[in-house]
Amino acid sequence: MADDTILETRGLAKSFRGFVAVSDVSLKVRRGAIHALIGPNGAGKTTVFNLLTGFLQPSAGAILFNGSDITGDKPAQTARRGMVRSFQISATFPHLTVLENVRVALQRKRGDSFRFWRSERVLDSLNERAMQLLAAVDLAQFAATVTVEMPYGRKRALELATTLALDPELMLLDEPTQGMGHEDVGRVVELIRRVAANRTILMVEHNMSVVADLCHTITVLQRGAVLAEGSYAEVSRDPAVLEAYVGTAND
Image 1: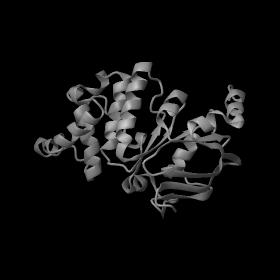
Image 2: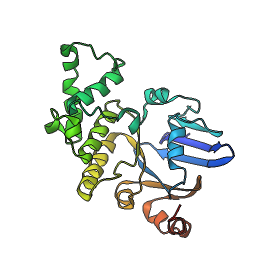
Image 3: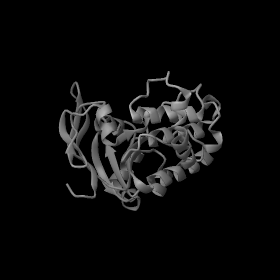
Image 4: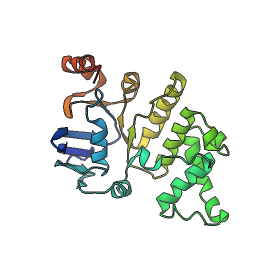
């Protein structure tokens, strides 16, 4: 595997009782890139994410991360290797403050995330790093805010901070702008661009303006298989891609 490839799949497939959800998907994600996985509803994007992170085991094929075969890994193993899917650690605690949520994520990185009885002095040792992470996603001024009181877009920014707390090499973001208004979308796009400066991002995203703005490479799935791959300019002009999107409006 080339040195600039951080994640590769070879002939990845998944069937459920005869239904083929993913078929012969071969991907290469370049180190340092923002790579999008797009496609109509039912194209297999979420199943691919579940396969990559060990929530599902493939029926066939292989997954390689940093050159190592991780096909049989469990979710916790993939996270320890440095590949973290946002929802694995981003389910925020609504009645904790923003700062406390990030501290919980930092405890998980340190291996003691369930030791809630630890002294405040010990937990305070995490504050400096937690505040750095909050500053990275423009939430430092909300550190003392109870999370349930935060608007939706700010909660998604907090999820980015808790994901970053695990110091991932590769972040898998599942619909990071879903359900957001225009202002929040713009804010989260800039946050993703910022956190991508020294890591790799693979994202599922329906908002094509976000994909066009952010992503270096786009892989298009249809019915579980790769339909096209390339830059946004290339895939957006591909007749097969246009037909897939127009022809599956009711999928």
